[in-house]
Image (cartoon, rainbow, N blue to C red; front, side, top):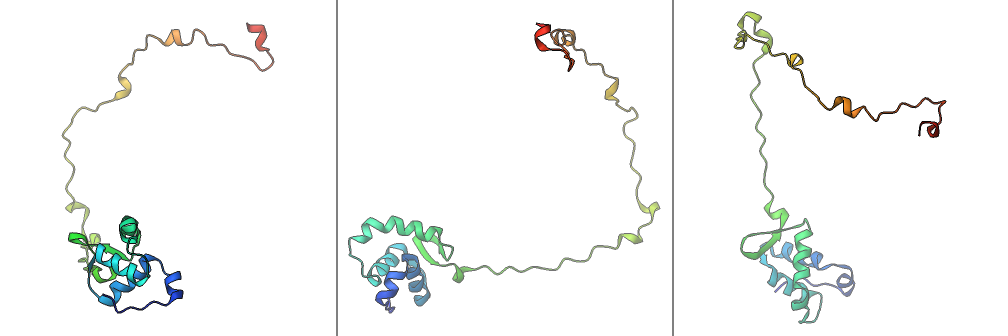
Length: 148
């Protein structure tokens, strides 16, 4: 088991995740969630039946704590032990476009001789007259009751 010793004050102040962090940090290697939680229970001097009733809560706690990472086959470890190194390669400089002359740029080919003008198409709306049939325009000085 762990060589970590917690004072009574630390036991009261630390969360299960804090104790799990200390255990993984001291060991320097990954552990299954079951073994890790058993060590947390032992260090925090909790009853043995605590394991069965709270293992699900412990899993949820580690899952949401960004200090931990779940690995393959149910193992957990500290995220710091598995950080990825990102290498940023410098891109080659693009050609200087100011050296290109206008004559070097190919002209666009005109593949369509006819222009399409959508304004020329007439949209027939047979219901236009019917829509305006019930329209009533009120003048500000007129009263609505006079029209009815």
